Image 1: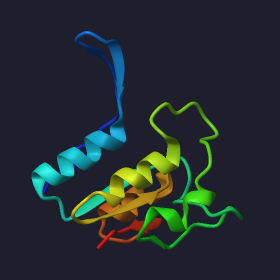
Image 2: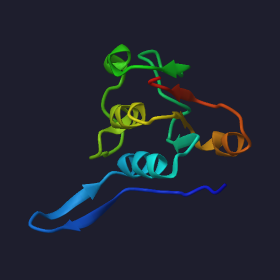
Image 3: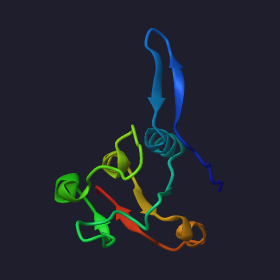
Image 4: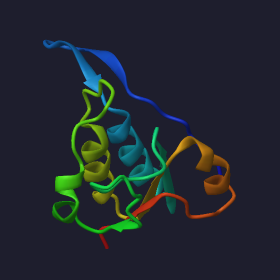
Length: 119
């Protein structure tokens, strides 16, 4: 296996000038094309947080967590955590959102952060 590392960027768009290509969209598009069994998305927080700041263990549909997914604390033109969750719920497989300290454990096969699974 291999581990592609992706990020969004501002790209030239014919007739539109420039547009944002979201890293969240890149991840889900590539994962589907490759038939990925595991998808991990590293964020600045240890997972998807509820209204009390606690990590939500699992998300299976957007409406159940929509109220907790407010705006990003930093500038994020691609939808913040809500955008990530929406994109990942569209995957045919499962995904995890976790913080920087969990990259190693995720790559080692652990299950840190929040599970995103629409199945």
